Length: 538
Ligand SMILES: Nc1nc2c(ncn2[C@@H]2O[C@H](COP(=O)(O)OP(=O)(O)OP(=O)(O)O)[C@@H](O)[C@H]2O)c(=O)[nH]1
Ligand SMILES: [Mg+2]
Image (cartoon, rainbow, N blue to C red; front, side, top):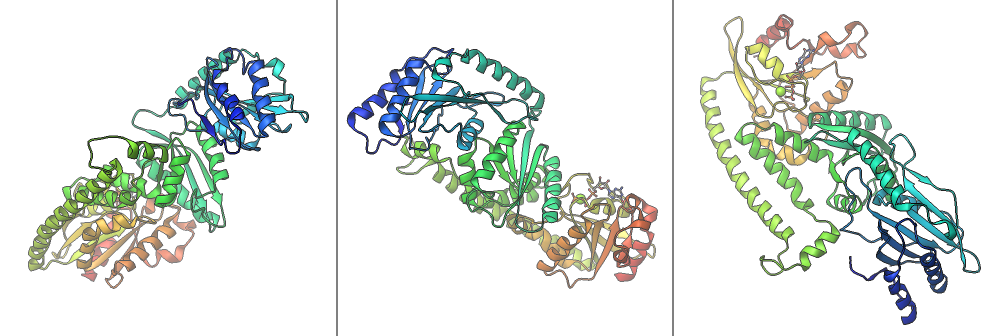
């Protein structure tokens, strides 16, 4: 780092500034939190300028950074050369002055935990300006315990605490814990955050589903928090103070990623990623990610990539600090064109390409459809919430082997099969992508063509997994989506699936079951009433 004074020097005399700059020459042995002389000097300067003064020291006791603060706080600058890895500390300790006898503040402890400082120490000034009590704190490695420990107050005569050895010991304990909690390669440890402005029960429902989405995406959930608020914070979703608290909890649980159970606006993504040294994603990105992993056909892949790009384009950002380095840098790019602009331009070009490709495939499909129409077979389309058992039903009905799996969005590509009814009538039966609450609008747009095909349906089979505790909400989500796609005019049949997994005598909404047909999609014998009903409908 540059040997400049960080913070504010406004209103200070040349002599005062000189004295502060000279703090870079301070020598402090590694066993000491800070040598007595150095402690005397920062207390002296602090008394003189009536503001806090801070130092960042590396593990050898070398001053890496001098900070001139305000009367009640210092702002610790970004230190790109000292980034704490997983299970590691920052390699820097912060020693600063307090103008009164106040012990470590909440902000001090938040800095300690968020920045993963080796130590944080406050040297308090007595009323006469001499150095008074000294307070220190360090992080605790145990996820079950408090995040940090504040040591009993001492004085500047007792800063020889074998500091370096203590930090190393703490760090080795941290890395032992980290090894135990570390995710397997290719996985992440995620901490999930839901900000609830309405009733808490729907927040819980949504959070349960987010956990399932994580499972499908091979993400370990190491902690969750539902935060009730009157209003969503426009910058930090849950407010900066709360967010700090949650991040500390996340770090403590060895999380490598934060997942927000809502769609983050571009400015929220920006403020949060500027604030935290951790991967941050939202519900939409998670769904997009699952779609991307699951897409098989080229059309499906194009559609997902298009949705991802459309979603990312306004969110393509770099960190504030990195931004200034990028824009200030010299490079082979056109004058004034930053990497960000290049990325944006590439994304836009790719979007245009993808739209063309999708259009081409769509045209071929329309021709196929026309052919099918000539044969005039009725079409039955299976829709429903993801994981309801749509593909299983199609498989059992038509003895096919479409992928059916206990994960969300197993099916992205529509498939059609012929079904011959007992009385020799033939129909086409199609399976489609599953629905979900708050389906990202980019995905809805990208999958429009797929969903459009539903318009051709003569009958819609709406499959509902009644063994899922959220079945009612899921049914409503699908009903609403069908309505928004103008499909609610097509004759629809409710199919209540997975009856083998529920105790029907004690089912909580027995009236509902009268509105459709009960089945077990993987048991052919249970499908007879459904087949009879369908035959009558087409
Ligand atoms: N117990 C039980 N499990 C079922 C039944 N029908 C489906 N399943 C299981 O539910 C899971 C999801 O089934 P799928 O057919 O893949 O569900 P889907 O609606 O096609 O899901 P997506 O394609 O992800 O939207 C699978 O593990 C199935 O084996 C049933 O009647 N009873
Ligand atoms: Mg499926």
